[in-house]
Image 1: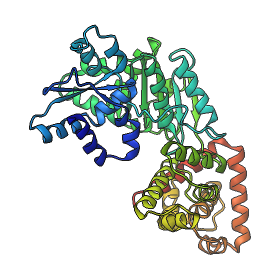
Image 2: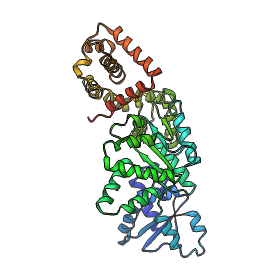
Image 3: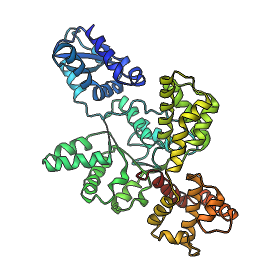
Image 4: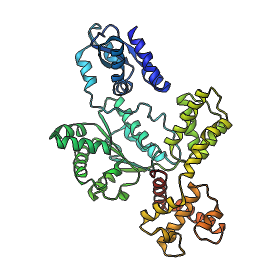
Length: 442
């Protein structure tokens, strides 16, 4: 069958994981297909939307390669087909309703079931699940913040997937997408279309809100969008790398509104949570790693969950290509350069420069013997992050920072750990600086 041939060709061009999760779930409907349109049935709206966005054009191109004519590939829902009175003629109304849905395409693998909960994200997870069950009722808005790569996007997609499965209209966008939409429609004098998109939903999910900083015109439009939705009892969920009060260049009226509802942070995962995340990732992707390998990855790959997941996928792919079993020695060998590079790419000068710029002091002051409060704090943070993010020993750090010996370094690290445990604002400052160092341009 032609459709089977096309699916096999597509299978060769995508990962086995994506094939199993999405394409394999489709069923070709031969009765309602013709040379102009090819109809595939999806088991649920999440897979339908995902395939339609990611693969429909590619599938149409593959049909064209085989037949010389490019059809329209349509993905419809199984229940819609069952409810159609005539099985020989798929309702145009159904197809158009699927095609014109206002729902945003969400990542169907980001669900509450696939999210690993630990003490560092328990509060944010509970808040997200509560609003997903009762959008616009429990907390509004919900503002989730924390460093890059810890699961904020996973949580808001999970909210979106849950409420979308209940028939609600969901719009998800990064703040960059919101700004691009705004600029495009403003330039083309089509602001009604823009407002219809963002103000006619049941749930609005906005990622990376911190990039609204200093975007005055976009802030004005977002302010009115927020007010319109909030007044109508529609749910708003926002994410950022820092809480509203710490976003510089954000209008006070927006900061105030972002704090109306519930603010939840996603902190750096403790070792146990990282281990659980790795095990969950392996379970979902069918990757077999023993406990020693899982513990090694959790202990050496840092806190960015996205990087950890990427490392696992790369490790498995390398093992498949080399036709080797994944042992601890094999994992260490494959990941050695990645772990080494992660630490060696960060120099002590990088750390000092970023801290000095962020705290508005001179780099030379951090390495000086000055004892003013802000310089002592900057120096301690520099020592703490240098010890955390680089392979330098305490004696070498003592030499670099002009201290007597390694016991002085140890004392400063102890002080920082005490402050992190007892002062939430200070903890946020250190995490923010750590994130800036880890994500600096190479």
